[in-house]
Image (cartoon, rainbow, N blue to C red; front, top):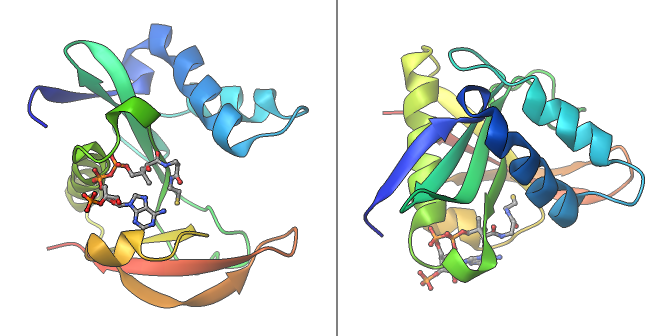
Length: 152
Ligand SMILES: CC(C)(COP(=O)(O)OP(=O)(O)OC[C@H]1O[C@@H](n2cnc3c(N)ncnc32)[C@H](O)[C@@H]1OP(=O)(O)O)[C@@H](O)C(=O)NCCC(=O)NCCS
C-alpha cells in the first residue's frame, strides 16, 4: 500500500493513547492497561525503546516497537521487534511488512546486525524472511517461537 508514512510515538503525544489501546485490547487483560500506557509513554525518538506508528492518509493504522528485552528468559538476545499490530481493516495490504522493514532500518542505524522476535504465530514470519530459532517458554508457561533476522 502506498501513502504510508511512519512517525515515532514519542513525537506525537496525541497518538499514544490510541496505540496503548490497540496493544492493550489485543494482548492485555482487565488489569493491565497501565502497563501498555507506560510502555508507549516511555519510548524515545532516537534510541531503544522505540515505537513507531504507520499512518495512511494521516490516519494511524499500525504500530511496531524496537525493545531492549521482550522475552524475559532470553536476556542474551537483543534488540527485539515487538508489538507489531495493524488495524484489522488494513491487514493484508503490506503494512505489517512495511512496519518490519522500517524497524529493521532503525535497528541498522543504531548499529545492530541481528534482530529478534517471539510469537505464538506459525507461518507468518517465515514468509517475511525471519529464521525460526526454536521454542522458548514465557513466564506464564506459554510456549512461544523465537525468530531472528540478519540486518543487511
Ligand atoms: C500479524 C499482522 C501484524 C500482519 O499485518 P498485515 O499488515 O496484514 O501484514 P502483511 O500485509 O505484511 O502480510 C499479510 C500476509 O501475512 C499473512 N498472515 C497474517 N497473519 C498470519 C498468521 N497468523 N499466520 C500466517 N500468515 C499470516 C496473511 O495471510 C497475508 O498473506 P497474503 O498477503 O498472502 O494474503 C496483523 O495480522 C496483526 O496486527 N495481527 C494481530 C497482532 C499480531 O498477531 N501481531 C503479531 C504478534 S507476534
